[in-house]
Image (tube, rainbow, N blue to C red; front, side, top):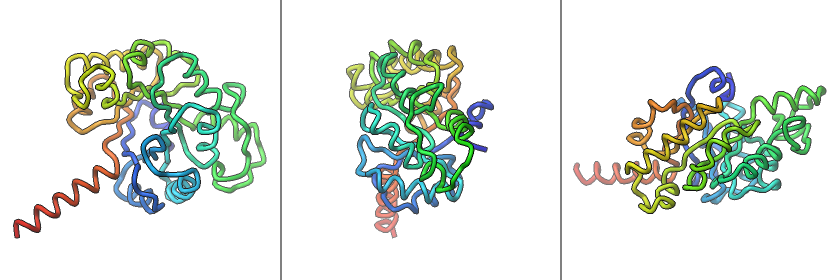
Length: 253
């Protein structure tokens, strides 16, 4: 079952972000660990479209969807990462209805959007699919379009953003949201909780998915708000903590 179908059926998906690792084996490791997806971070990470294509091919080959956070909202980024084999795209700092409409325009095929047709390549697992109309319909159903809400302006417009036809999920980025709220890096304040709750309410009212990227404590605190798109940490943090624990254990011998 695809992650889009899992979400459509009311289930949860769990994954992490890939920012540092360019070896395609990271997708195989994540699949073996039991994660539902990885999200490649092109906003803050060093991946190129070429390395993304290799990673996506390896991961999808073992049944692990690859999502992508693009560095900015543009047709060139949104459509190209999907043609490179991504199963969904997230746009950071989404703040307006017009931005949400552009995400849909460049991520979804007609009649929902205006994505250019790529009928043979990484996005089709290099298979030639004869029925182009069915390919487009399947992609519109399976490709996730995610508006990342991480500013005060984005929270204020969350209701309107969620209501845009073709937006599948609102996912809160707590660290940039904490900066926007005036307490950089502090993600457990009352105004932060209220902003996350407002975003969750907006998603639920529009019949869309509410997501959050954070540590386990933050995620647990917001599970009761209908949190179903769960993303925790990134490979850089996981590697750093693992090395620190190793060093601590070795010194304790």
